Image (cartoon, rainbow, N blue to C red; front, side, top):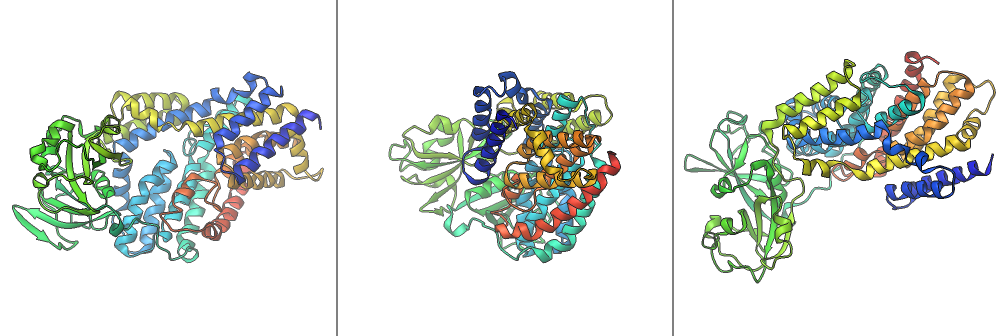
Length: 588
């Protein structure tokens, strides 16, 4: 090998070691490698930066905006709750997790889908008295496999499609992957349904305990025109919230305490919940409930532009020793106090008659600029917003779902490329006000995009210096190696990479190697490209290989060995199915 090829292999090995064994951020690692390749003269600046103009990378960026619109309008929640229903047994719960999670992941970012499903699954586990460890890892695996069914199901598919467009002039259609993805989903789903209960431990998740949390009392009312009147407390999903519990119901001036789960809700019911501050955030995300505090409706702030904030009263607060009503808190701060906690315990009684003391912790509903405005003012010792506490704009949910459907249909019918359809869908989300532009910017994960785009420089260097061809020769240990065995070796190597580093980086690193193997065998490159797509998404054996696996680690109370116990046989099953089907659909 030439010196440049050796240097390139050294850079790749260093990147793999750094990503797998250190805590240095992946985007820092990949950008450092890109800079080294440019400074050393191995790549020109144009060659090194080609990933930042790749259509696959741009499609991923735009799809972040589309997914944000679905989340901000509550469309994902609405679909999830409609499909999940109220299962009675563990097997039913598992099936109702696997089907909607895999179906939704085929058309939207699977990380978003898993994030929205986790609270619902935790609620099931509490209500059915089942350990969440039996449900959450199958949720992640179903979302991963479901994402392989369409081109937009996972960013890995878009990355490899972008490489095919730029280097081979080939572009895949929306459902071209379904010929292999759907059988994979069927085989993997049956395995999870039959064996997840047996192979996963009976273990509780790492849930926040109410006894050690700041405790509040939060009141909400049932909207007359919403979906909740006529449903029981259990059917409405209010029986076992993750961070609070239903204490009382006030109906027609009469207080009902210790209400049973089969109590039917009526329009105008005032529900009193007690729990941690996150309880208020959970209630904001249930369609059909609205704050019962009278002053909330007097705020001159659109409902979907509000958020929940905790503020600790300081010694210079102007309303000390005054009641909430006397201090004219709402007019002064454009915020409404939902509840007050003192010494970690909620203060009973009407909020308006409570007198402020130094150290009181207020749970506020206010505008999104409140934290920046009062963070450094002497009125409060501490001001902190609750993450993801803005209520969904449910009125826009039909718009968001219609935009997603139009994007999928226009791409599937060949009217637009996936990038063009994504651009139009992202623009439509902004134009219909499914989400504001300021939030759209925050949802675009620049660190992920930088990792993907910078990874392209490693692939370009391996191609240019001949390092990829050399690795391909090492893989082909025999002159008469069959294409099937070569495909299996490429699959196994990609899986090994994706378990150690990010799935997108693994796909970009393996692409030039796979193309070199196909060239040396003199066969069609498409089976090898598709193999990388499926193998890079087949991360089941560690929590680090795929983000959704890491997301369920804490809530499910999992250990590393749990992933290997269920993930290893699933990986083997998926590998055999994929390697067996791909050459039948895309012939060598």
